[in-house]
Length: 463
Image (tube, rainbow, N blue to C red; front, side):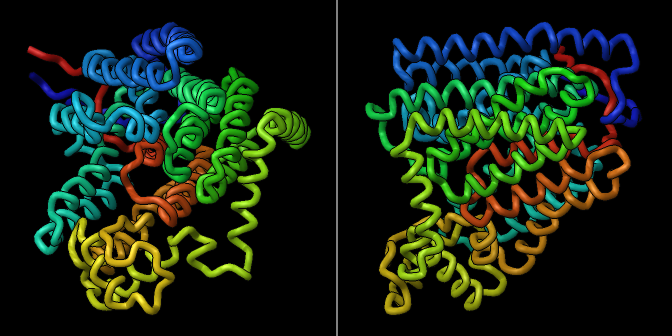
């Protein structure tokens, strides 16, 4: 088996395909893209008969299978990965609970891809990869201090898989049409799937709002990655914007305050990238009208979501009540850091929280006292577990997108870099690293921002 790519070609991620092979690949992506969108719609439509969970299972099985086929067919692979990343938060709640499908099933697929493409990974030269490798190194080194090493290894795996996602993006890096259909597929999965979910929500098990929000959010992430290409080619702009608006409605109805904040950054990016003030205004007004029309059909859920936002600013409530206990967890993480500036070890927060919350219970609201609990914040988890070095490296990784976007602003990449940095920075306030949606955005943005990747244009070949 030969790893792919050995030439010294410098990739230009802005120019259109320049040779016959690139045009042939573009035709392949255009050929398969509509079929994938139609297939996704058909599966969700079948869900009205077979049920949401069954349709989700079919979609996940399809996505995982296509991700494996992607070892040989790059376009097929990235489309499959797009599907799985979009439904990740749903499948971890409704499917990955035991038996054949386990919590880390998709992680293992990406880990396999990383092993096969290891020579390529060693040659990555983008700015983000440097920060990410340093961050992963500190996480690995500090495993030895962790009282919960297996949790630490799982935490490390949840972050490392962004490299596997990047491999999929790199293999279609010269095919702008593939990027366009990534947005269409991701947006369709989230928009149509959200409609089915809210139709059948009464018969489904409860899912955490913050985790669930990354279902429509990942749909919007995919649209953001595709939107600049859509605008440049004057293709599917209105369709992608309509899908983004529908996903935004589902995001509102879910009621995750952190998710709504991240989503607003993405929607602002989509509006800013549209050329012409009058065109921006027309699309914004049309989108807002559609947003109101759909959300009006779920008035009770819409009011509940607004109530959750108002609750955050209600000074008559305690900080713990306004943040559903998250402020207690952040305070506990700060205490852990003050006691252990070097960190308590990768994966060690739950054990330390159980100890410190019991010892200082009189200073807390009573949330999960003495119980091992996840931190629910990537920033505070890193501060408590990996101390100052880990936090600096995570900060470097998150800000690197905006920095590279600024450096390459002449290629119109400032907005995508700034949007990615803001989304990661805000998301890690209220979520950790397990979800694939954020890493999907990070991997795609890394590939878009870098034009110095030391890879060639050969396929993987298996002997």
